[in-house]
Image (cartoon, rainbow, N blue to C red):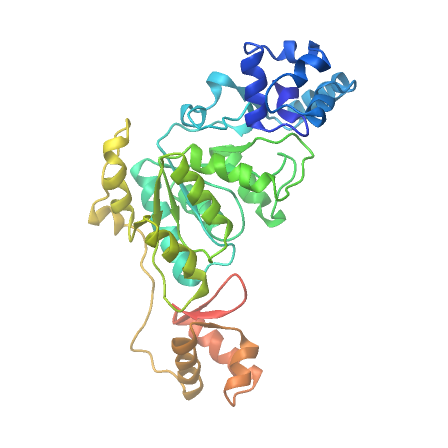
Amino acid sequence: MLLLNSLPKLGPISTNRLLEFFEGDPLKIFHASQRELLSISGVGPAMVNSILDQDHGTWVKNELEIIQKHSTSFITEEEIPSSLREIYDTPIGLYVKGTIPPGPYFSIVGTRLPSLYAQKVCSKISTDLALAGFCVVSGMARGIDSIAHQSALEVNGKTIAFLGSGMDIIYPPENLGLYQRIAAEGAVISEFPFRRKADRRTFPMRNRLVSGISSGVLVVESGSSGGSLITARFAAEQGRSVFAIPGRIDQPSSQGCHQLIREGAILTTNANEIIEDLRPSLTQTILPLSENRQAERPKDKTNSDQIISKNEKIILNLLEVDGAMAVEQMCSICELTIQEISVSLSLLELSNRVGKRYDGKYELN
């Protein structure tokens, strides 16, 4: 199965078709003749050449050595979570670093450049779902994915990260610490062999697993063509519930969520709405979060009565109108210098009136 899972030109659908034809025995696939393989519907010459390659033995030996070196396991069939065995394109096998936590599973996805609003919403809902007993699932990308994992870990919750590459390729590289912590306290999972780099094909394949393992998927923030929409559509096709956070109607980064809501996704404002919607379909017991339990987390320390300067008022007015701006944009609009703007922004950050986003722009808190 390890070799079958890695073959170029073959995906999970064609591989499962081969296994069905040969009664679930992968050895029969590799011992079959070219004519026999070509007689199978959907199997073409490129696939057959990949199957009949003569260097398979060396590859398997090297891959097993790498698996052991990286303290990783390769699981198949009954070891794969049952929810993933239900989807149309069931994975043949999965590389796992860590231990897959028990469900229920819930996926949280979104933009790599979230607004401060999206960061706060993602952190709160991820935290609450983890406290309620859900295993938070995402793709360990920058932005919303990373926040979802981190928020679950901060309350000793369960989390799983699916990679769009081999287990030895950590992307983004600054997530090395997060990768290590998820592997220690949950599981990092990949469908791809070691040394496989991410590309346009691997990310959608990863996304179908993120949605497929889960009872539902929440899109926190996404543009009209964001990769999170692919995950949401996989979820809908797989019969999973799709949730979306509403945003500002004048922000491009909210258009994807609004589009999903128009198409039937559930408009969501907090974790309890997700819990109550999913409760009838869950086999595990999930309790709603009480108001007191949610209030245990520290609140923002904002002093609304603090006196602000003229320059700070100018910046606050700009951000209120335009939503999010870079320092250079502010400088081009108002008569303040970059130094004056930078000083004022620092003071506004200290008073928690504004915050800096992943893309370097500033936004009202």
